[in-house]
Image (cartoon, rainbow, N blue to C red):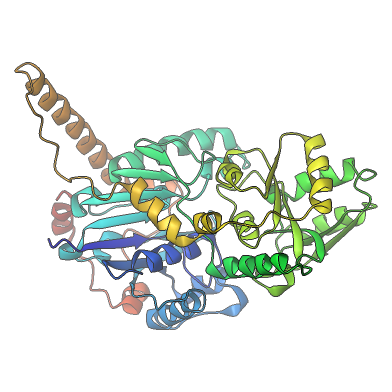
Length: 476
């Protein structure tokens, strides 16, 4: 293989679904390919028309993968100052209504030809591999990096029998990431601890937010009024996204925060209840429909209040900091990365929240330095990713110098035993994921071992191989 590396970035969602696993892997692919020194392929799910209607907003649907690729490319080109040079491929997928997630269908490793298989970046590796039945990632690719986006354990604990489900899911996540990944990157300490993992925020912000931050800095330097509005919060309008904590705090301290006016922006299944709760307060709390955070409407707000503790790394907090705003958030592992910025105000209790809010309304934000802006950028995030992923580690086992006669055979036996145990673990997972009854029992969409006729037609895939040949290929 030549010295030029090839990155295949697999993710669990795609635009126009505006979710983190659609947007962040797209930016990652664009910035990995930016300097022209790497070949990059973004591998995203293709849904049938019926599933698209369930998932994509505003009745946006695509008749072909080419049409959706054009949409994705236009979106990213409008947000970066260079022409992205990565390629896009699609894998067959189905939408699970029960899990509210897109799940792969068939062996998605086949999207990348063997001769191009070098580095695989699995965005949400646990999600991609719960039901994986196909080639072993670590056999096909030289290095497999998993990036953990979501704290699934926190979500399932809110379900019926949540503690039991979370216990099973914890084991399953550990199992599949251990056997299919060389390295795991956790965006923050708010995610599940996993084998071979490091904590590193490898996400940046949309460059448009940094442009706003530079404009605000210029206004401050010229003595102009840069922030003419007060406090706001933006997020999906469900109670678990911080709205309950925020409204409880505002209700408890209405008298001390009597001069505070807060605007809430979001859409979601709890919108009506949240609006009713806000109307019962004596404070001026205004509830508005959701909007894009890059909308000029938000540029003049000075204070972003985010009490949510269910995020892994809150994208909107990073965006607010990039725009030069003061951000008030809880002392929580998901906010650890933001503590380095002087405009991030962390509270440990209710009293501190009130005092920090009053101080923020009376102060001006501290201007961001060039280095602080860089740390929020995708350029810096890409550098952090490359370092955390240890891309340049040798793929072969290191040569042991001057090993003793007793140590060397012991080392070989230990390594061989670990490999044998991993092989057995992979075999067990492949056996279970190859049984329809087992897959369905654990939540897979029925009949997703192979793409159906419609998905094969949409993606131009050949008919599935005979069962005997397929089994032989899975063990290679």
